[in-house]
Image 1 (cartoon, helix red, strand yellow):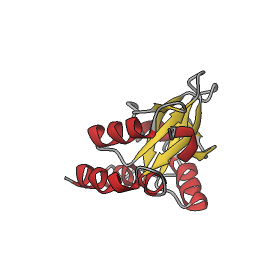
Image 2: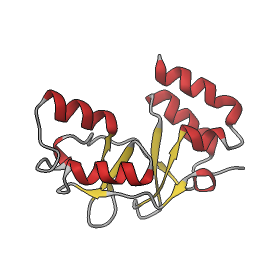
Image 3: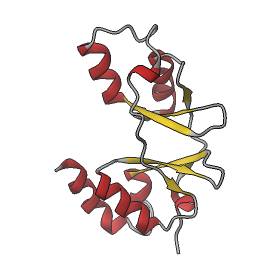
Length: 138
């Protein structure tokens, strides 16, 4: 049985709510990713910010990325999974919620990883990833 912890990208870079949007963009550039989890002082995931959130938020609202805290643009409702969740369950959650990435939490609710569609494509559920992509795109 394959678990979330077996396919996740471990130790994703994160931001605090008071970090700037520019800080999140620098992480996305450095890590070549499109999402940064936002955490509190206990590494609990309190939000998530995507490259899309940043593009739409800064351009449409005329916000300065160097002065705008990520808390202004992040999505505070984060769908997560546990390290010990079966990867089939994780895939079902992602498909149902129509999300491309899901933070992974340990027993203390701290973020320890993130699973993307790419991670799933390399796992034992790779045959079902096209269904996820289709569900998210639709």
